[in-house]
Amino acid sequence: MADTFKTISPVDGSVYVERPLESSAGINRALDAAVRAQAGWGALPLATRCGLLSRAVDEFVARSAELAPEISWQMGRPIRHAPGEIRGFEERARYMLGVAASALAPVRPDDKPGFTRMIKRVPLGVVAVIAPWNFPYLTSVNAVLPALIAGNAVVLKHSHQTPLCAERFAEAFASAGLPAGIFQFLHLSHADAAKLMADSRVANVCFTGSVAGGRAVVASTAAGFATAGLELGGKDPAYVRADANLVHAIETLTDGAFFNAGQSCCGIKRIYVAAPRFDEFVAGVVDLTKQYRLGSPLDPETTLGPVVRTAAADFVRQQVADAVQRGARQLIGESAFAASRAGTPYLAPQVLVGVNHSMPIMREETFGPAVGIMKVGSDEEAVRLMNDSDYGLTAAIFSADAARAEALGDALETGTVFLNRCDYLDPALAWTGVKNSGRGCTLSRVGFEQLTRPKSYHLRLAT
Image (tube, rainbow, N blue to C red):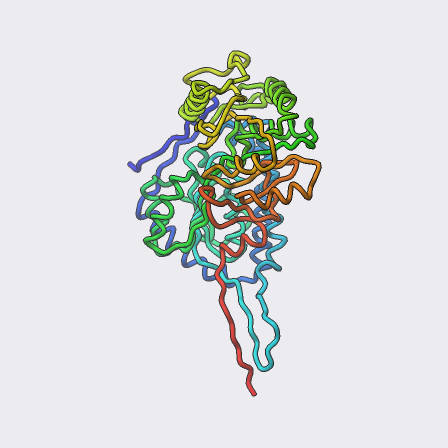
């Protein structure tokens, strides 16, 4: 009997999904099928590919009522928030379909008499997408749809926590009439995922996950010379200047810290506040945090669900306890959240003050509902602290002065700078990170460059 894996639901600890792991022979068949199918798919007119993929998006969105509770059961997001992922999926997919014709159009240098010159964007071949559980459709659509639009075949390996997401992709593509072999998914062990990425038939790997996972991807792709795009998470900061709209900053940053139980790569994990506004800001965040309702994600009244597993909750608790031992103060008592219990993935949100950068909670990734808040005396101090991190995915500034905020943004070591918002991906903008947050980018016109290669045409005309 083939080896299997089980998806343990954070809702109640039950086995929600059980699937067999793919065999080595099955992986080989999938890659052979992808290579065969890609040649014909890449030769189709772009408009034909986009038409089929638009139909697949229609099929997917039409099933949103079914998909939302599956998200809650698999990874614990409150049912009231789960439909938002389907809306975000559609927004990103429609945008990339809409800009494909111009983004993939040949680049034509200035005219040169007697010659036709151009650079075409051609498919890479087979793209392997390794997707995480925290935003299972949003993270994967960033790579899956653009790769297919550009003429590649895609093999998706989704997290064992959210395996149904890969299957739902496949169902939508099949219903839309995509040719066999163009999109496939594989349920793989870590070892076999590494072999997949090392295979010479794979031209590119799109990975979203941990820094350790990113290093494993780089090691694997070296064997077959596949290129790789890495989105590896962050320790995203926010700075609230003295001129900020404090009500808006409190509402936005509290949501940015605790949405999806803090399990967002670009969620807010550390906040720096101008000294004159510090006390008022902290009081507002604490008051709003106490209004969250922690409980079963299947309850429509729940606004904060469990983290993905008990071990993840224990890690956040340990980070908080370590900070308190070093002198920090936690402002939220766990007793205020009856559902928060040791030994379970149900974890109360936490706000910490008295923190500093000697504490891991201000420097290491916290994938859960905890945020540290520090007082700063100047813009320069805020920028220095925001840059004092091994990560650089996003950074948010709250201010009434857009010009000053842009100037501060120029000094920040980050992939995206926000003003008066946070924790959002605009599909028109490149999603990218620096330092340990990754390399390459997805989304926007620029994202297509990661999924194609330039091919130059230098044609001397007959005389």
